[in-house]
Image 1 (spheres, rainbow over the protein chains, first blue to last red):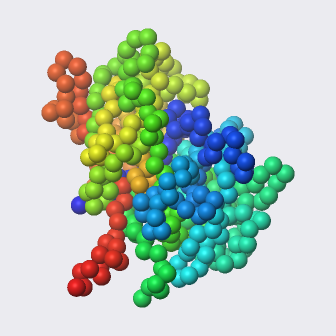
Image 2: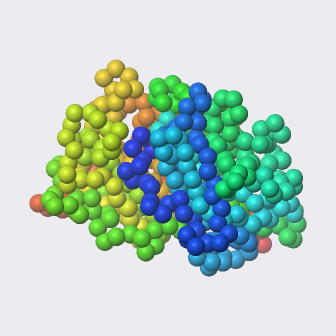
Image 3: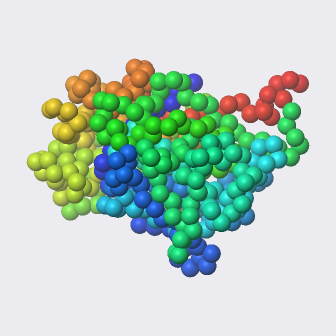
Length: 182
Length: 244
């Protein structure tokens, strides 16, 4: 059997190869239910990370995927489900998407609406993975959040602002974002 | 026993210890303030993790896998063909999957405002490419061999020549970004990024193989680089079949 190729950092020049003009736009400009998720990526000294990239992957509004391994059946909705945005010099990113639906979880549980996130950057030899939940949803029954120490759960919850949701990512130190081993 | 309503999902195997670099690696200084200090929390592989985006269909231009085209002239440097297969850990080809690359020019300079070292830019080379794997998981790029370049990580530090590769596989769990290196590069021994991979054999899997068969006479040297993303556990369903 072939063995896995190791991960390496994206390095400082990922912006040559990875961003797309419409990368941050998971949904078309005229999508009426679009939301904006924005925030900053910060390092262990609280300094913005200007050379990171955020990637998002999520279900559609009905909690479905256009993917053959969804055992409920793939839905050909045309929903891309994927967004990517490099950080700007201030460490800011922004994704335009829709809020995903809730999803079935293990043993009859329900996963609250969430978005899976990969963070890539110079200084990250491997991507780090986190999840975005929403503070205006009921997240109480979510099995993944329940597995996270209570004091750290709020690092996974995007906060509603005037024009969308704010989700900051702290790579290290005080208020460090919860990262997952997937 | 699973409840009847339980969804049967594929599971992706963990890679053996030493396959991937640690996030905290003192030799690579940029990790110091960027690695999480809290332990990672195990994320069960649920619906969002075992699915993933199908990207690139209808978005790839005719010359997107030929980095020597699209400019007024040809770039400086040694023309090369880089080809290989995208496979999962069970040897299955991953079809119609987006492969993205980026690299420095022949003099080791990136087309990026942050790269200021005194090696010239090449007006005929941007250094970015993308393609989709074919029905057998194959991809091909035509480009030029990138040069080595200095960086400030340690005294007289130089990165070995490399091409950055970005792969998606077919599930979120399989996302991989790596670097392809060239055989017998004398700079390996002093490069902390290459050496961050604990397992020596795993490290060697990042080095392309010179391919005389694919080398085109009077035109271009060829290098072969197969990329392997995580494989699947045997599914519950298959296990049950085995019991009959």
